[in-house]
Length: 436
Length: 170
Image (cartoon, rainbow over all chains, first blue to last red; front, side, top):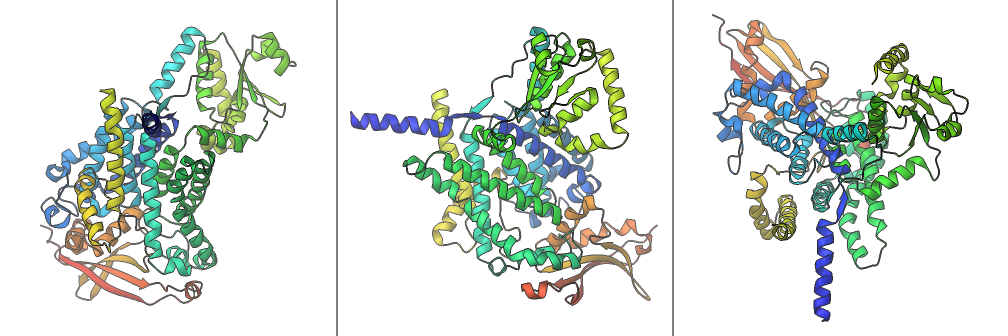
């Protein structure tokens, strides 16, 4: 009986370990990051694709067997003409756009990976760490249900439902089994641990001069030599921090064992992971600012997104929102289909859960949040009551909201450029006058 | 089908994770490390999961080079193109310099081909030798020396990587 109970318990633990449902949002974001990173990398190579990948380029098709690894290798480009290569390149770019938007995700991922791998296997001499990581996370994305969340078809479906039913409820979070996350976590951990092991076998990372050497490299560094000299003062500290954080990824393998043995609380590995992701963001962000190493940093950030689970999103929200935060109240026209659709879009961008949506036709909502604004004025544009009590409308309301919507953060500086508010206001008015 | 997947997925995941780890085992492999590597290689290579995390490892590259193309003439060499951070557009710089670094390290056979592709770009190279030259310096590896690199640049040495005779324009 005991053996049966133990066996059943182990089976349940095993099922939970591989199939526990987790948020699919992280992988949806990683899918978008993968697509964008690959798209940018390939577009930057457009001026040189004939030289890098053409049959009569730097490496010709005849040279391939003697220059490139020949075993366990496949590339469509081995037998493709120049025109075919151009067509395949365009198809790859289009497939990546479909991956980003989330249309026919599995098929578009399959096509983009077959083509990406073909280009990589042909032009191996052009590859860097970012290209390698793209291949690795692309493979995991293909295996995972990465089209469950963060797709345009999903958003369109929600808008349609809101339009037809008038219901503007935030939908339930989409989930996936945890096993793709475990594959990704293992891959990223292997990447950092083996990188740290190799660094320890050298001497400049131990002596503290490694970062200084990299900063003085004429091919990689963005800094003039004199600035590199100054920044080199920080080389030992940055080098030690890098070694420490890369080695610390091993904790993500060790700590869960202590949790399983009930020695540590379950929250510890998650906290350590978030700390490592933050450290990695600082390191790779610094590499991007100071060095020109292609799109490696962005590909790493894409992988990091895939490592975010429900508890991580909650922790990030809590860290950014504090314990208690007054929401930004959006007063919208509940009788306007376009407005309801806009609310769906805003909700989908409201990753920090800072917005509260109220129908302007509800007298209680008007009394609570905009008592001094007549209904006639409310009808002319969307109004936003900020947490500090100020009320803005139209484009200015949109600009106030942009600060709280992470997908729009990169556009916030543009919204303050002289001339843009005037254009924005006129555009908003035109849309408001022609909305259905 | 569900029961099959519930059994197959964990087995596949464990295989994939083991293969990725085995493929990354260090170069100075013992007998068993080599055996594991060889066992995982067909799967890892076939699905393009090959990887080597040696960026700036074990030590960052101390040799830093800039490149130039020059046409050999009767009165000496004339530089027709500089390939370095200042002369290559920022959108292409990382890849082009990576390509040149690889041509020097492992893809030497492709150097003549790389040079010959520039023959058409420079009419002055028609019927003449076009060569690729690397100007390299070795950065110091001690912090005290690196702090003063701008004032005391290491010596630069130039060497020819490859030469091709460009066909005459007809």
